[in-house]
Image (cartoon, rainbow, N blue to C red; front, side, top):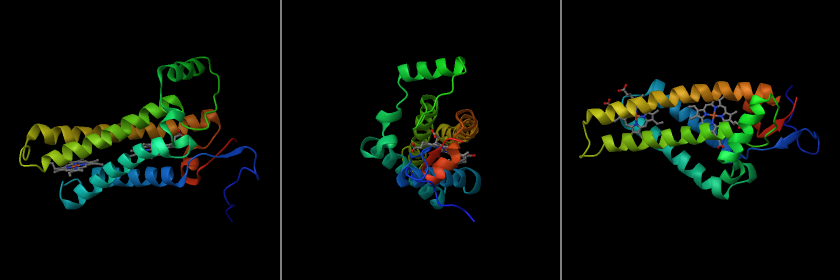
Amino acid sequence: MSLPPPTLSSDPTAVRVWDPFVRIFHWSLVACVLTNYFAIDDGKDIHQWVGYTASALVTLRIVWGFIGTRHARFADFFPTPSRLRAHFAALREGRREHHVGHNPLGALMMLALMAVVLGLGLTGFLQTTDTFWGEEWLQSLHAWLGSALIALAGLHAVAAIAMGRIERTNLVAAMVTGVKRRT
Ligand code: HEM
Ligand code: HEM
């Protein structure tokens, strides 16, 4: 029997971090990207709509980054040089940090992933216009961005699992339940 997710009052080590929008955004984006890369990469209608859905999700997430809940806001996790320096210093010295929201290096990767998704949306759209239709360099750029996205996402997933172990928090489970809990 599975227990209900912990609440702040029932478990003092549990913190509600990711709101439903962030979680639905994340796993829908993963589904769109994997579908377009591995299942429907022919550039036809479904591929285009799935790709536009991914771009729309990222656009909405950017808006949510300004008006959303506390840890969803860019102000909470934007990887500024000083935050990155402090994070590298902690990693170098083997100090274990506890970030309630995203850690600065993870945040840098997330911004990169979102930018590449928008890049795919743009290069995909341009291929459908009269001006760029049939342009080989654009097709190659689109394909290259697709592969770069999968490589970055693989690294991101491995890093999320590894950082979770280091920080003793199951980060992947938190992206499902919304709750971060120290073990
Ligand atoms: C999550 C976003 C997307 C991903 C991961 C993605 C990925 C891919 C991949 C892997 C290919 C095959 C490339 C090759 O091997 O030649 C492809 C082709 C294509 N995609 Fe996308 N795509 C995305 C979004 C879009 C969007 C939004 C559009 C257009 C509105 C689009 C239009 C096309 C077209 C027209 C092709 C065929 C290009 C050719 O003939 O070589 N894609 N895409
Ligand atoms: C195509 C694949 C993926 C893309 C494009 C992607 C993208 C993202 C983005 C944009 C965020 C930021 C979430 C936000 O603040 O709204 C994020 C966070 C996260 N992703 Fe992914 N992701 C992918 C695959 C995965 C996979 C497979 C896993 C599981 C192993 C995963 C685990 C996580 C976790 C745990 C976080 C939160 C990290 C933290 O606690 O700071 N992602 N991802």
